[in-house]
Image (cartoon, rainbow, N blue to C red; front, side, top):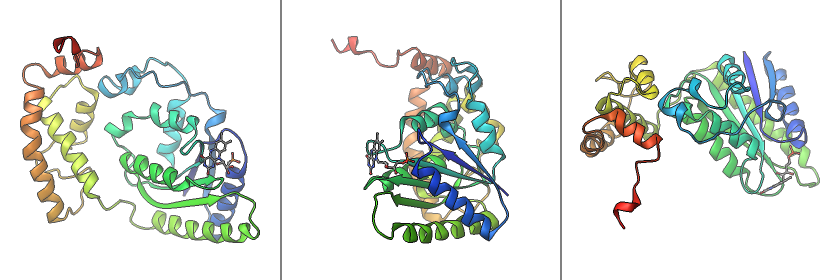
Length: 280
Ligand SMILES: Cc1cc2nc3c(=O)[nH]c(=O)nc-3n(C[C@H](O)[C@H](O)[C@H](O)COP(=O)(O)O)c2cc1C
């Protein structure tokens, strides 16, 4: 079993102490391979906002060769991923945000199904919930089955360590149970609707030069009977809501992509989708 801990803080501080304790407790329960990936030690350029990764493919990123693909491959080889960061200025540190920005194409082309994720945040006093909530959103959108959030305050309060270790033990139990059990997440209403929106968009646009379209087509997600990214039971109420959303979306997308869909995407890329001059 391979576990990858992605460390998003700019130093080896309390976060490292907590993660080492988590690694120790995990290994008491089960033999696992445990790897630390410190974003601070990697070379990751900032996202330039060109949108090429979405429309043309991640290999068309203008940044060139940095460590982005090393990170991707490490995640790809892991069974379980721990997203960890301290709270900074009410949210995640810039390092971690840039990592998510640079891998944003995975929001459009999710690929980590069958992997388990948890989120850990250490904070001074508050804001850890916001961070782990965000980890949940990111990981779930990327295809992970996100099963647990661990939030820890690092203020010097007497007896804190005992409480922290207790929480970590619970985290390890939940994490291992998920890793050893059924790996696939139960689809939420949000993710069923997200699937429907993208599917409808690509089925109507059918732009074979578009990286998202190609990926969705190759995965078989554009086939009529596909309700979700993987075979699973979708409850009747979710299917009805998705069907209604589809009824609303279809004419919108038809209008948007009437004519040449590639031209619509290119216009967007060239910042020509909005033209305020016509308002005057
Ligand atoms: C620049 C900076 C911003 C911070 N912002 C917050 C914050 O918004 N909320 C909070 O609860 N703690 C905040 N903290 C405290 C850290 O989250 C806390 O001390 C954490 O345990 C540090 O982790 P580390 O030792 O792994 O770096 C901040 C710390 C720094 C250095």
